Amino acid sequence: MANKTALVIGATGLVGEETLKQLLNSAQYSKVIGLTRRPLDIKHAKLENPVVDFDKPGQYSSIKADDVYCAMGTTIGKAGSQAAFRRVDFEIPLLVAKLALDNGAAKFILVSSMGADAKSMVFYSRTKGELEQALAQLKYKAVLIFRPSILLGNRKEYRAGEAIGRFAAEKLSFLFAGPLAKYKGTPVDLLAKAMIKEAGENVSGVRIIENNEIFEIAEK
Image (tube, rainbow, N blue to C red; front, side):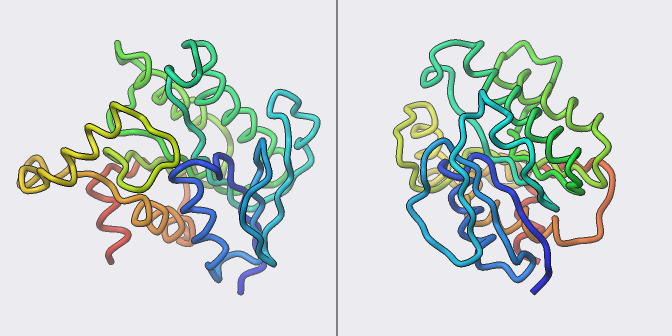
């Protein structure tokens, strides 16, 4: 087993929870840190679970890891405002990225979104794109940006828009063929597998992994 540490933020969400589970079962890491607002439900010999207030960076500014996995995200509906959404989807991930880099982290692995674009007229897509741009400016050995389509998995909370998209992705999968294949729904277990596999490679620089490549990485 490699003597490496992975740090996960967003570990209580759909993608983060699956990523955490797979990291704990991965021989790539001897320790996994789940940085959360509330205690995790799982226990594992490799797991450390500091419970912090992300608005108080002094509580986690000294945490060290080799690779950082960011699956943090919310919706404007849940957050309550665009400002609150931006805090969760942009400000906190960027702050954690900077602190981890200062403490020696080498790779940052981000769950972004298909269509992320800093110049988008859509606030959600623009925020995702702005985070990608900001992370690309940091001096990490590698920044791996994953852009999945509709996420397929059992989310604990109900998101109406996502539920509709998930229904279409699952029940109308036959439509996502040929040129439309890149839009097919992304199973979260496959996404987590692709992220961990790619982070284990000797990669450097900024890489954007679109949805179709996520499938290719996970299945090879």
